[in-house]
Length: 191
Image (cartoon, rainbow, N blue to C red):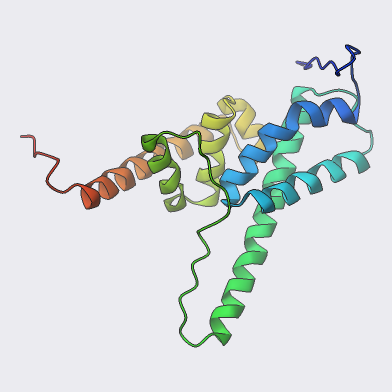
């Protein structure tokens, strides 16, 4: 079991909930923001996740791998619940709106550090299922192993590999399709 060391501003070793929050808050925010495409909603998800951690018995004593996996699983469940609630609201609005086209994909999240190619791939995440999106983000953004991802999503590592394989194929096809739309003359056909 890996334990992440944390030291506060005064040079004292931290433990308990403060240490867990310090170590995992930013990775959880990045993960939730990518899932939701909305940084404000991601902050709500992470806050709810840490509230649940604070109420957990026994409480977290240190930022361990077990705690990390639990946090990512709870954050995922919170995000999925929020997505479902948003989808219900969307359907309700569509029912009462007179053929208006509501665009719910344009969230507030803006990753200014991403280069152009990375941004194209991030934009293409919408073509993936929620589970594929989760697995891709945990693997690429958090650098977790198949076993760790499997623990978080409650599946075997072989299924995680299968999900990643199909997700990467879908992302590659979508990137190729989008590149073809934006620069039809820039590509030459290979024999």
